[in-house]
Length: 442
Image (cartoon, rainbow, N blue to C red; front, side, top):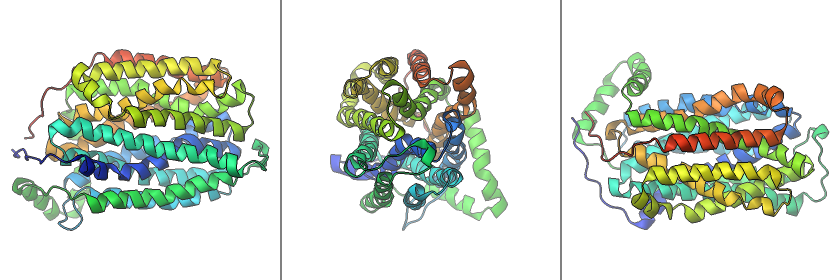
């Protein structure tokens, strides 16, 4: 049995510096949410193909995140640490892809780069989640993960704000139609900034935050792992993931039910918010993409404002109640957006969306981090992220036909469909039984 490590309480700025890298990682994800699908449309992709073109995220997340988590659990370097080498390499891969993405000359090139970008982002994301759990004592976990939510909001806010600002500043003379199969130049700048931030912010956290060395017992296990033949070391992460899923706490299975509907619906929103504005506001593709960016900027601004405010609320009322109410709020937002045609008024529902996004990015991670073993935190954070990408994978495979044949190829119906799924997710969230204490690893 491993001994629990008594972790020192960290200051506000130590927790802040630890999470700065999320700014760059989430800038990249913000571009994926807001700019990648418009780029696919600019390059000639039909709307009903958007889900399948986004399958890179679910597949790479399903494979990369749990594997990197399992491998990082068995890694230690006195010079580089345990988690930091992985999210630094992931950020570098993502940075290179962001510089290349807007230069894509054809749809197949953009789709291929999305695959590589997703590998990098997922390689950076999973060990970063475990990194925060590794460093913080239990009473600071909620604050640490809500600080992550703040940087999630900040990164996506900067990404989406850059899109519509550059559109206003540099896109006025461009007249872009889908038939031109051309990516507007003003989109380039956002990707170039993202490429810079991806690596620089992660470097900041790497240099500012030392990792906690393994205990003597953990070092024995790490050295045993290093001594194994290559074939056994290669297969071991797969075996550990399978075993971890088999013995996973019941609470995580219930979280999986919530995530199934929550993330399916989020992927619908990100894919079809731009086509929605082409329909409800009669925008051309360029203007619709800019409006979608304004929506994302608004809800991520709210996320930044409320992320840390959720900490005392969850302590007082319980995580599941705040989580469920937040999901209901997102559902209400999606029900209202298709019926608002004023470009300014349609930003109002994004207040509810932003509160929900802050809750989604913090509360479940806090809950799970309290109940998983310290020496398997990487694996279980990877499995938690599998619960995100599996619904996304299901969505990419199923929603194209649903959109085309059941919803009449109408983006309004797609967004309303997403609202229904958020309400279902909220009902399932109310069935969660919150963890009371940390499980001691065996």
